[in-house]
Length: 260
Image (cartoon, rainbow, N blue to C red; front, side, top):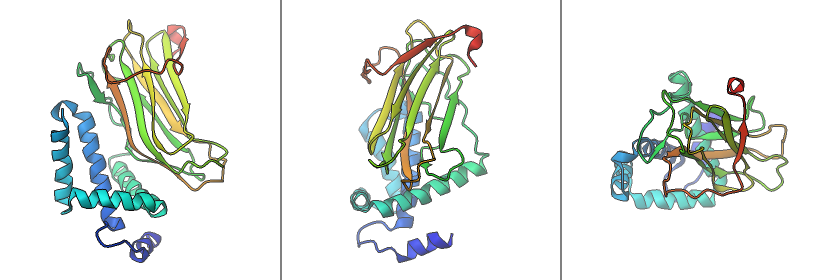
């Protein structure tokens, strides 16, 4: 806490740019707004309705979108300060989750909507060398199977990946379709938006969606890797919203009683 107070009081932010504490608060509410849109996509079908929700965040904090956009640009050029702000935002979100018991949210209900965000955990994640488990796991089991042929897209924004890092963050996305499991793996080798895509077999419902985002923490050559805007979109079969890379999907057919 002392370090955080010192950071807030000593850093110098130009006029017209949101100070760190204010930026942290706005980032948290913007993340919540993105979560609301992702989980209630039918209520936000176009850019106008989404912009109205974001505008409510700006009004809550008594700022304009122009100030927010300018602040993003400035923090993007001052990544050390930006990472500190993300740390503070992540810590506050973690505290809120702990107040709720720090458990994975229930699976999103099965829906015939074309798309829905089923990500069950917080949208921020920090990977660091001293973590006991350096990552997050998820295991989503809907009350009834997701529709056959459903496609899943796990997306996120990543900051802090360096070329000299011995290990890189890893993503694994898998689905259980009874006697068949499909999965895709990806190593994150650079900053920026990252995603993995996986489509189920068209003749079988999806019992479970699971996987992890993790990083080997024996590498001490880095400070932290920051991940935000985490979402896991489920699309109905035949949705034109995604294009599948043909060389990333692997499958494994197993006896039905061997799948946990």
